[in-house]
Length: 112
Image (cartoon, rainbow, N blue to C red; front, side, top):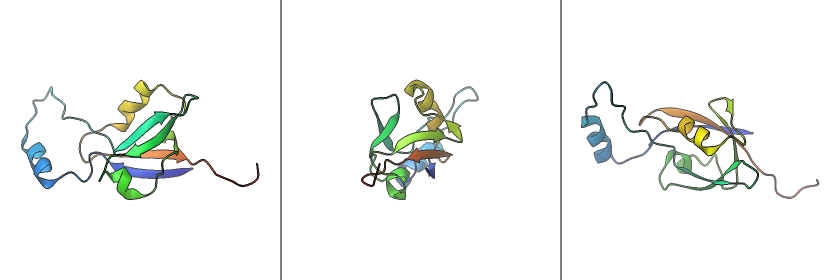
C-alpha cells in the first residue's frame, strides 16, 4: 500500500490565492473547500480507482499515484467500498489544508 500527503487546492495561481485571501467570511460562513486534484471512477465492485488528475494539482505533481490505483484510506480511516457520498467530504478541505490518502496498486503480470 502506498500513501501520500497532499495539499488541498495546491498550486493555484498567485492571483487566485491572493483573491481568496482577500475574501472575508462571517463567523457562520465556512471558506470554500477543495480537493487534491484526483478524478475517481468506480471499480465495479464498490471501490474507487484513480481515473485521472487535474492538471498542475498536487496529486498530479507528486508522481506517487497512478491511474488504476485503488483508494483504501483517507487520514488513516479505511474507506474501501464506502459510498462516495461519505468519502468525498473526507477528502475536501480549506485551501492549504492537507489530507493523507492510502492506495493499493494493482500488480500487473507475475505469477498468480
